[in-house]
Length: 319
Image (tube, rainbow, N blue to C red; front, top):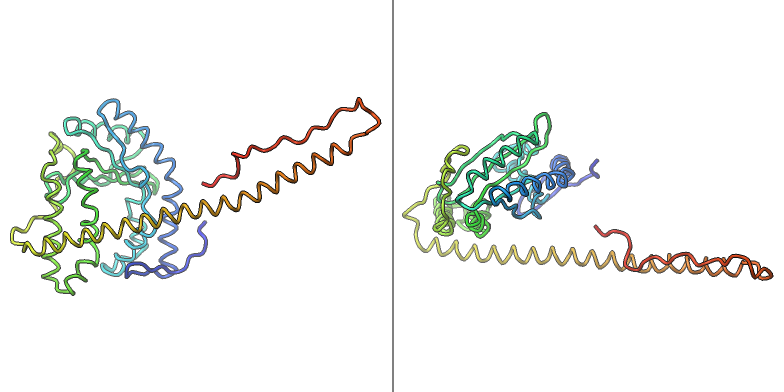
């Protein structure tokens, strides 16, 4: 059961307390399923690694950040008039995974993964093959267990397409956020030109990515973006600079988050230390009293040993 939640605001978006409750409770259910689903995907990866060289990438990101989900729901509500209840019900990528295969074993590896997931009781509910798209190359699928809310996203990449995708992360953020509109000062024609520039830059990183043979057998073939050959070079350079700024901003956020985590761990250790020392002192005092209370006239009486000392290396879990 969720704790009572207040409203939420972030990056120009907001949720009412009731909207935030709906979104947070949906995220919490995904968080509760994470450990089991991670274990399942590790099993799938181990088998496909032996047969086709499969590799599970980015497992530490297998649960979507709760604020990212809040922002997604708030943006859909404000910009597309989609109720947050519908977003919470239809979201597929709170739990998400990525498997990579080398190009020559890619198609067979993906097909074997399909078999394994079906054996686990899952069926694909969405299959988008964008290997012919100039801006994003790969296969994105969503899976659901019959008769339950449980679902997840699974992306299939080659090592090179995964590398390009990760390098394009900031451009993806820029082109799908309010940054473009703000940069264009609400001039829609100029904003579209900036999006075209972002597409060109994303396409650059896929230039040397090899398309796996046979991939056309899998999923629905989609081309979602086209390159505009007339985008001004100065717009491309402007977006390149914005990408560098966004990357520095994301790096600073990641560093601040890591430092906050370390600080919380240090604070927990500082609280644990005195408490553990006090507990050990109590044990020692009890042991001393027990020894002093032994009958002095009876030298044959059994000797009362101090209670065993607790290992200094053990303490309450911090996880």
